[in-house]
Image (cartoon, rainbow, N blue to C red; front, top):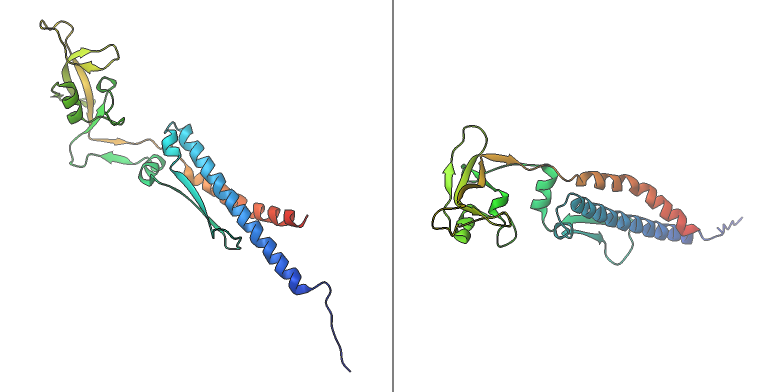
Length: 209
């Protein structure tokens, strides 16, 4: 006796199609998750008033490129990891040489490069000398003798009689400062990861409809 078994439809073809659908479902869900994390991280950064420039350092990329895969992965990162990490962890910052951190007051203005001005740059720009004032309570000061401009900046006095000249605090001196925690990027990454299995299943089912 000879038996012959025919399977209809073709089981091998069905399994191949199912694997292909799974690859597409996983790749699509992972890509969407990566883009979602990138968008929410950028929104967090701008919402914390850290600027569009820092937000644009957040990038995402999917692997493998150009083809679907069951093992698809997405990587989201920042091109400014040190700055992002500082705003996410809120570290304690100390002076490198063990002395003081100079925090500019509004009278100091900004650096020519647009960031925080240093005492050395302020003296070169203003032509004034800074003087140290120690205080037992509260931060010590770097002060200068001059006048306040209409923009609220400390400038040299042109008066020969000293009229309008005053002692102005230019920098606050502190031994250390804690940067406030302004970001929680791990929260958004965890939410995207938790939603990933459901998105894969939804994409898989959608491919069959």
